[in-house]
Length: 230
View 1: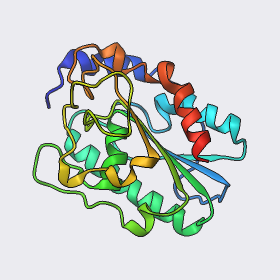
View 2: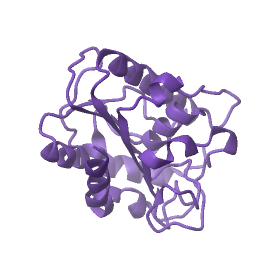
View 3: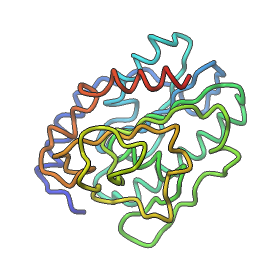
View 4: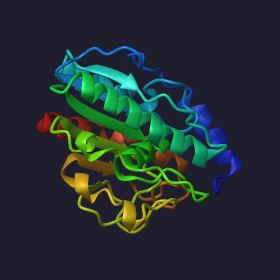
């Protein structure tokens, strides 16, 4: 892994202070007008993690919205395996929900490794070190008309210059840039991917604070985008 131990320690210290929002167990299916699926960042405990505040803003605008979190390791050690497992888990959870609740509008939120998990599930990818490959979700699910909005904060697979890029990073790709063969352009009109200069993971920078403060900077913009799409 190309992440130094001090970054790992700092991420853990910051992120474990986040209070997760209550979320649905994956075995439960409760059909709602709006359903939010979150993918947390590396080292965060199971739940919505740093995305909790964004979830709360969406639920304030849509009080009946339900939420569930992708169940995956979210580890920095064995990152490739963790992100691959996350992509597979999201594919399974999203497929299960769409099949049970075809009329629900779905919002996907991902932070850090969780942002990569969302992209890899929808577009393909998974492994970043070995040759393992995660197939993209079946288009009958990915193209489901009610898959409405996708928000990514600090995606390690960030590619500069894409139509759905947001934030001030226009010069650097992420540390695991998304190859053209697994492009997410197919979902471009549904995605806002936020990345700022200095971020060590989506912008190849060295300012950890940039990476861990996306909700503070962009929650209002992100919830505005989600509300426009719903």
